[in-house]
Length: 408
Image 1 (cartoon, rainbow, N blue to C red):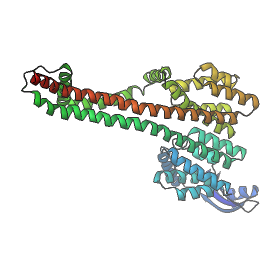
Image 2 (cartoon, rainbow, N blue to C red):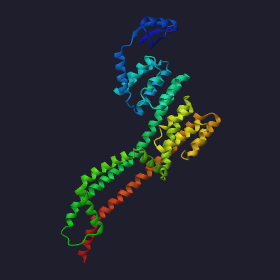
Image 3 (cartoon, rainbow, N blue to C red):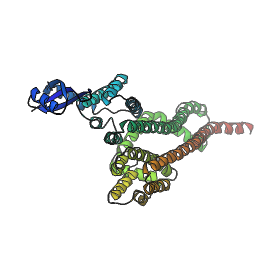
Image 4 (cartoon, rainbow, N blue to C red):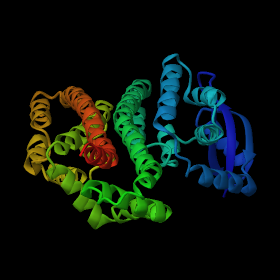
């Protein structure tokens, strides 16, 4: 039997496109008429065409779409579907509006799969790097319930909120890092450039230099002589640490350290809990079963310890334990989340309570991030200013001693 692509009219006069199998085109036409369809065109799908499509699909399946781009695509899909367009027409419009070549290729492949008769959820599931599990599962649930446009609208809100939260965290981290590098550059210039020039003034003085001055001069000599080696070593150390802590054992140790460090524990919990609660709320609200929602939510947790806790909670829920009790047993889920989940289970409004828990956790996280940035900036300026002051004192102390000798 071979594969045949056909176009036909249904009872309402609407054009239907799909792929079916048969021994020959005449048999396919007969089967279509038996199904109440009026065949317009039936043609065999060549092996070469399938091969080229598969090769293109395999290449595009590795494409990763950024959260911001995915939120724009999802918003376009939701808006066009709500206007009454079919899925195929919607995808065609999105392909035309897509700007990036890679994104356009992925969306073109998905449109081709839908045109061939695949569902939208089956089509996006072939591109796991482009569409996260929450996306694929929610679309599948939306298709089954007939609320695909509403599900896509919720997904667009979720992705936009996720992108906004990610930007806020990035902005909070960028400022202290920028401040650190500026201050570090000032210190390096003082020690490696300014100090050697000032030292030449004291070379002809038969006077023992203060201990602080000798220490700074020694640091200057080391940095001048071995600066390049130290820079290479620092870069190697950074990449080495990244490699080591990407391994399972060291990564678990590091993430456990985060949870045991005062100040960091709440921050890590809030970030991961907000992502998890938001993911659960969008999936439960879209009609995805709770176990599938919890398993998909494991992937959005960045801390492997918290990820493991959610996995254990999911296994307990699968055995019949209430969700709130399963989350409470780990001890790493905020009490607010546990209470809201328990309340949602009891009232039958789990999706709504999860959404409220996500909003409350995100607000708390933003407050903590704001406090951290407002404290960390002045603290770093104070520390770096103190180090600069020490270097300046080390340079000036011999001059003070000379003035004392002259006065004597």
